[in-house]
Length: 148
Ligand SMILES: [Zn+2]
Image (cartoon, rainbow, N blue to C red; front, side, top):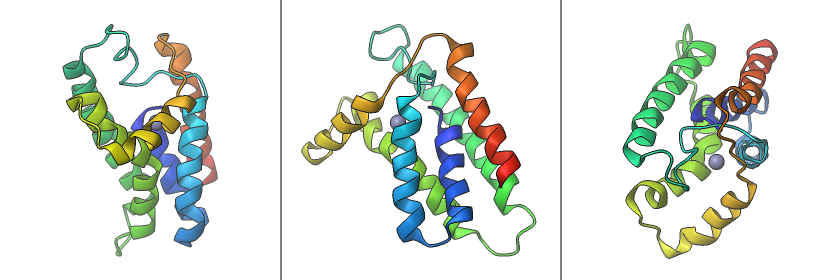
């Protein structure tokens, strides 16, 4: 899924389950669950060559920028203290994708990451149809906006 959905999910669980021993594994587990749902994201088409790496990278920076803005808007704005748990939750919600990024963009994968990335890949179901692929992510974001 988009970083927007993964990070917002991680931030959401961190807002509800304040202790990191709960929200970190939950944010990671939900990442795999969300990737299991058929979806469209900026990496869709990379493996079959229908999307260029440079395009995916540009879209990823836009995705990450929107992610930071949304998380700031939902949990950080108006707070006098830095909401560490929210940003840590968001980070762990994205971690499997961060670990895979060197392989996807640099063709470089440290040996110790290979089993983790293969595990991640087993969950990943992307679909080329952008509309159907974005729909479950919109549902996730709307649900979080109402439940937060
Ligand atoms: Zn992922």
